[in-house]
Length: 303
Image (cartoon, rainbow, N blue to C red; front, side, top):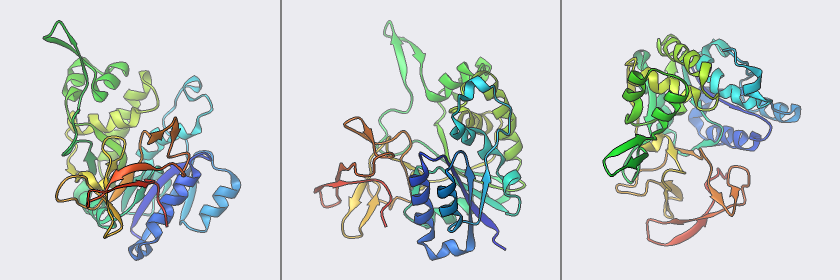
């Protein structure tokens, strides 16, 4: 029986990305000891049939916390903003859970081992979206030279979700935590802490982003014990582009010592001529190599 599981979710539109994520996992021999489970948020039957040959389990995603219908408007994929906080309910036969968004893929298995190690003893394993080369961590609107209106992602979402100003201030300049990749043990108190905060954020705020705000609240307000992993364990390409190592044929961090990217995450998309690389795999962008050359590359997973 496999003890650890990697879980993701997609609808029909994002199936190609999900399929690539699964392939990127299964190319590593170590994946034979790890289950892969999928939450279905609107897959077509032929897509589900195709996936069933590659993964261990597929379950239909549900609204685990009641959400008004007008907020959903037929966007079943929004279940990902809720159901990922209830993974042990869907797949109860595992000890450790690693969630990876379907618009991400695995480039180095070492980061998978790190995530499963990070959640030992009930801790949350996760990555902050801050690191070398980040030039802006929070946005503000300056008034009269000295006064400022805070526009940070955490603060903005907290105020919209009608979280108390005292708690919103605690989040205002805390490094944002991206919930697109995280790990938790089955019996961790992190699940209930996260779920309780998610109920709060869903009452007044938008569905999209609610689960991220809730996990930031769990860490920075409720002091959920957390193991913060390096940026290459959840490399968000829209924040900072990687470089390419032509000798090793792999993506690496753009600054010394140029660590290998562990998980490439296309959150928010990579856009060119009005088209998103997540939707159009033919899109390529210019990247710098370690040899200071310029090459055109896609950031999507390629076998």
